[in-house]
Length: 111
Image (cartoon, rainbow, N blue to C red; front, side):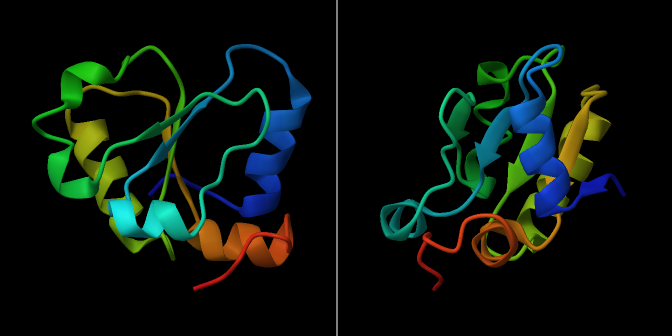
């Protein structure tokens, strides 16, 4: 499955080369209220995992997408779903926002 580490994603977001990937947060609304991964200048969208099929038209299949959740399990399922729907450039943030908090930005609260 297509996975990127938190450090790889951080590098992609700061590289500035090509089209910026969309950070797709597939967690529940209460989780987004606790903490959200929104690096400056990075496109971000929140669509809970269970709403992805009904809201698929909100996503651009030509834009690179990096899905994330708390630990990377739900987002990995969303990656598989998007791949099956013709999205070519879709990846999972391995370890989710928890890995990002540990490896990239320790100022983000963990839950």
